Amino acid sequence: MAKKYITTAIPYMNGNPHIGHAMDYCLADVCSRYYKMLGDEVRLQAGTDEHGNKIFLKAKDSGVDAQVFVDEKTDSFKAFIKKLGVEYTDFVRTTDELHMKRCQEIWKRLEDHIYLAKYNGWYCTGCERYVTDKEYEENNGVCPDHQKPYEKLEEENYYLRISDFRDEIREAIESDKMLILPDYRKKEMLKLLEESPDVSISRPISQLTWGVPVPGDDSQVMYVWIDALSNYITVLGYPEEDISDWWPARAQFVGKDILRFHAIIWPAMLLGLGLPLPKAMISHGMILANGQKMSKSIGNVVEPMEVVEKYGLDAFRYYFLRHVDTFADSDFTWEKYDSAYNNELANDLGNLVQRLATLASKNRLAYQKPESFVLPEEYTSLMNDFEYSKAFDFVWEKVQDLNKKIDDEKPWMLAKNGETEKLEECLSRLIDGLLLANYMLTPFLPETVQKIKNVFDGLIEPPKIPLFPK
Ligand code: MSP
Image (tube, helix red, strand yellow):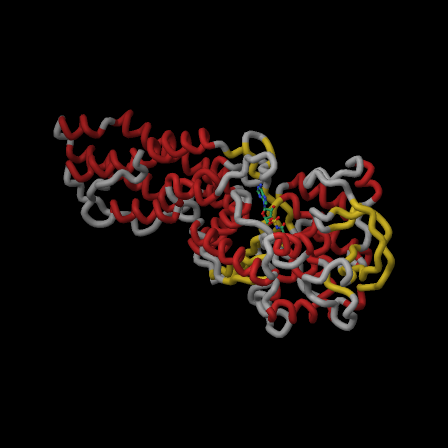
């Protein structure tokens, strides 16, 4: 049994969960359930990113202590992850005392690659990062993600010498030893790596207090990304514990907006610590609302709980794992959501189960379930390549095919004509097909898969309530 470790990005605790956060969780959960289905032992990490000025200021605005503020937000994220049916095994908070202690130890171990210098340049408070002069010019002085003008800043910081690791990182990305998906993002990262200066990894205490203190220098606090990226290994017990059973991660899921931190700073940290690089980094696209970025100021933010509650967990997972492309930006609209539920889940899958179960029970079919299923190569190859929305499409074609076969072969006519043997062969073959499709749905639709299994186990009875009631 192989051991596999899968990670998700840890969201900032400056707001409530929104629909975009669901992407990391849903994709990582599919990955984890797929490996478990193949017999692997899996650890799936989740957590919360709780330091930094943005969070500190939000707490201040709300009139509560920062720790109280993040405690509350963390609870809402935990409830959200649970609601998505995500089976995480480890949860890390960056304000956990143990995480902070481990983070300081990580810093000490990186000291050979850290130096103190003055910074004089541009900064985006939204991204909490420095901006190069080139970027400043390209964006006309305004952050495209936050629509806020960049600020001028002069301060003393510690820097991580990216140049110490550039060659090794480039080699790992180029050779796919650290696979970056999709391929066009890999190319983007290779270009960024060449342009990337050394990165500032601390802030003076006058600028930032809500963070992990730099060991040996109480005038500086760690920059949020150092603290946040460390979570992937501190949660495994690094550095006191031997993490080699789990690290390197098999797959790290992140949004395209934060891939640059994971493809440059994170590998530099790992190499500085003498740890191997993750095997794969999967960068997903953004969820848009009517083609636009979701934002509170535009007023088009979709509340995830509302979406889950409308038709239930599997309808949510169905939409976000099939109709939201794994890698590209995709749109969410209520019209598309309603149509996916009614026309696909209810009409394709729900009807298929109802039709086959009714035919089998009416004709008292003595159905013998296959001992095991052989997964089609096309499916496993897509799943192994993290092409989840395509793998889901592949399964759906099988579901639609089975409905077509029922229409073409008309088993009710075989029953009417008393062609018992032919009828049994036809129904058994179609139910085998359905159960194979159902098996392939295991990583995607956990509740539905169980319900379908129950229908065809033992005496077949059509579900009293349709699987997807309209
Ligand atoms: N705290 C950092 C991550 C640190 S990981 C060491 C962060 N937090 S975040 O809350 O802004 O984003 C968390 C995750 O949600 C990221 O993977 C991000 O890409 C994803 N998404 C946030 N909004 C999104 C959409 N609208 N659509 C899809 N994913 C998006 O970045």
